[in-house]
Length: 119
Image (cartoon, rainbow, N blue to C red; front, side, top):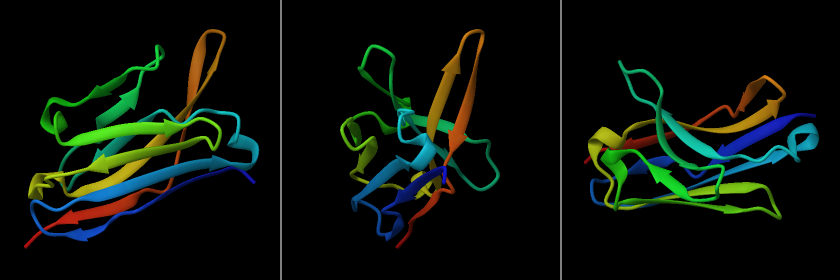
């Protein structure tokens, strides 16, 4: 069974923290999960943070200094530590596992985990 599962979302007050996890398993176990995206109400899905091809982290300007992305390669698990959360961080967070082949790429996505920042 192909599966990408995100977890760790929830309701948190402004200034609070959450840690998201994402694991690929089954037929997707050998495809590295590399990026976190979020879909906020009324907006398009946007990149929040990713591990680049060179292994370095990259962040959206809006989360720099507050979010930290990391990966456990042995477990093919991606993490997103989110600190100092703000209401504008509210949304559904998805992780992506890109499958690259000669001439293209197919992206696998999880079902998402809801993050709500509200007092």
